Image 1: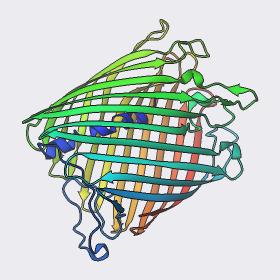
Image 2 (image 1 turned 90 degrees about the vertical axis):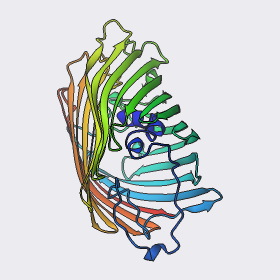
Image 3 (image 1 turned 180 degrees about the horizontal axis):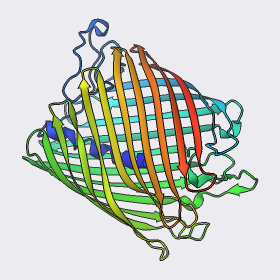
Image 4 (image 1 turned 60 degrees about the vertical axis):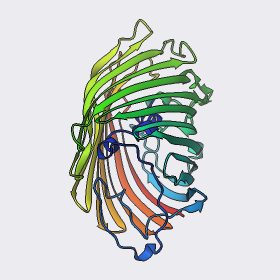
Length: 435
């Protein structure tokens, strides 16, 4: 299970805590604003407290949506062309290709004074110019909402389903003749209650993964169905508002990872149970610097006798800094236990940090740069991977109906496993039409 999937599992519950709980002592409905009466000539007020360059409102350039009763529909379609000089992320014999991606998406959001409900979904189809075996069609659909029971007390819930494919850099599909596809289904429920300065939040989520068997590179079948599993996660978090800008918290999270096939094709039993205990704080320093940081201890215990329990220091957080009204710096970090089916490995301990800088060159022109580093320590085998990435790009907002993006990125892996290094460069150009 990837870090990005874990984040998606708890996204609806997380929206009720962190910085939102600092700035208000009660649950606030997330309303979707109506289009300004004169969007093209509306006064641009600049950044507000706690906003970032990318998140701030830009009248005349933001999509206004289609009003449907008490909902707003936001449809869009993106067409992207990118060139990658190493599409298989190979150590030697790199192969390049041009890829065309078409991605229609839509979201439907409520505009209620209390409660909220939203649906979103889309399709992404990728077509390779030469390597047509790499073509893919992914899709996803999700729904989530919030019920405001009373002042300071709310319930959340959500569900999602998706068909996706693994990136070719995945170590779990080496030898596959085509991208490994999988389905993911999930349910989430949560509750948050505030008692004056004290708040308590609880979340429970379950997600199921089903992998398809594909053709092997040398003929025959590449089996991935032994990775089918169910992941159950729960967490309880309690925080105390020392002031409206500082809120320390403690959190306990547990998980249960259960595979449909008790023993995988390599003869390893991979079921496990884990927990993580952390302490941290959310903070808001005059709206210029805000975020949350935490640290603690984690453990993942495997049922197979030959697998060692993964234990160690854990950390994470997100920080946003607006050094000027035109520049935003964001940083995120996390340490997690990831699943893998590498022969002999119980799992992997991944420590990641990502940095992004956005600069508003003009009101409708945003320059950005990204950098990331991930250290992956595979357990019970002698393999460690260092992943480094960096990129530059520009976003041009032509008007509320059209957006253009261009970017360049580089990704590199340095591995202790022979033949597992790679370096790849990608150039992208994307046009997005929206309403």
